Length: 133
Image (cartoon, rainbow, N blue to C red; front, side):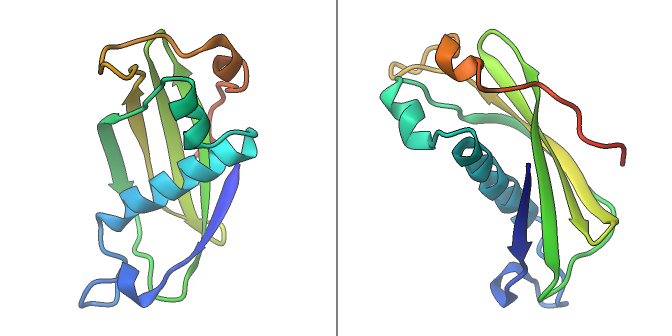
């Protein structure tokens, strides 16, 4: 799935470059759009007694993004395990790769203990690679 984001002034630092931590926000927005694209939302996860906290994150910064850039954020589920899953991302401006990375999420229940992703949700999450960088 590809999600578009127009860089706003608040995304940038004093040098007019997208502030490094905002790439994780872009990843989060792409993840939320991914769930909506699968016909679900985070509210559906809550209703299924599931939370997906980020337990690890990585971003490789390749080129800067600037105010008013239109970014295309690709997101896929790249790994699905018993009680965790990994989303992978690429952020591009036109055909130029600006950043890529991933977030690993634990699958936990209301008590904060690991649990398996419910079969109905698991079935809607194809595991696939991103295109080559």
